[in-house]
Image (cartoon, rainbow, N blue to C red; front, side, top):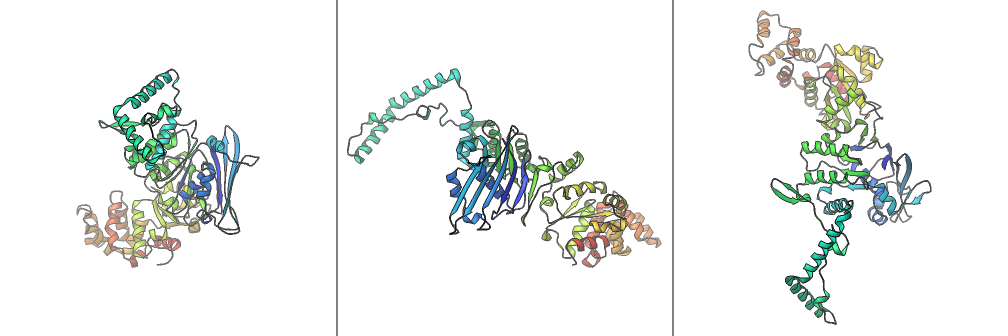
Length: 515
């Protein structure tokens, strides 16, 4: 049994949407974007009892009072498809909620047996410390054990334990005290021989009643659930996947809570590779990076749920995204993404934005380095109309404009209509031009980032009166100098000089506006 589609309408905290659910579903978004609300909606339709539904859903969950709040899912099991529908509608008094939950072509009311067959488990963000959940897992695992010939042995042990409880002098004394207390409270005398302590294994006909699971670590034996919160998360997920006959779909809210990044990656592999389908809400790049890109759905705080097209990236693109998302999650949830070629370009654009009063974070803009102009097309696919649909602006050097113009089917001079800005010849040439020869030379020669021997050629040219912008730009764009050069000049780039860096100024004006 697995989930194949989900739609929600008229919920007070989630914009109306419909998405496909693939092998797994990973919900990504900022705080208060609605990720957890979507998980709770799934719990309403797939998990909660009828009594719990009425205890959970209130008028505050319904956005438009005159319309019903609905959740619809499609499930697939061995090629057979079935639909489930949850509906909550307000009475005329505006407070009373009427709830229905149906499934199948006949629209029959969902029963407890139907819910058991679906096999949904919801682990909220408090699940690492939920003792009820912990004991349920161990009890369900023990229920899968077939004792066969061993059953008689366990029954004999239970009988022996019961006899020991009855014959114990210490417990007899306790029974007498209890009998005296009951006699004083009742209009009859209570005989201590009529009171019995009975082991749960005998009372419930379950040899594993109240059996606990412990783990020996570092020479000490402790209950499995007495470990750290992070380890409890891993244990819970790992054990639920052993219940593959009963548990088919697992919803987990923020599974990364309390976990070190290395443990987050271990947990992500458990989640991905387990037999059950996983529906996750997470902030962890380490967890997101383990899943296929087309299994990621972005929930935006300002409304809207964005799902990329199935198989929208090539295998090379997937590798690039996997390497990038391990470090940064923000671009998926950004208002706008600026992609530049390298780390020095990123440092310069960020500095120019700050000194001109256009802080990128304040405007929801994320700056990302592509790792070279050849990687630019991959980012177009990641954030484009078939991907995560985040507005994308690019900054490239002049030597890349021909290829990009060909890809966009425009002339080189028309690239800005596609939000591609070109530095002429490159950013090094532009920031040297903005600083001027004297100030640029002073910044480089006085910086502790360069040894005197490294700037000797510039010093000689300066003494001879031949130093010019081209020579300084050539020095700054050398591979060994590139990063140090931009760090050396940044303190000299004021707001006035930042506006002279033409391609950066045009880009920032396009994305944020004039400063």
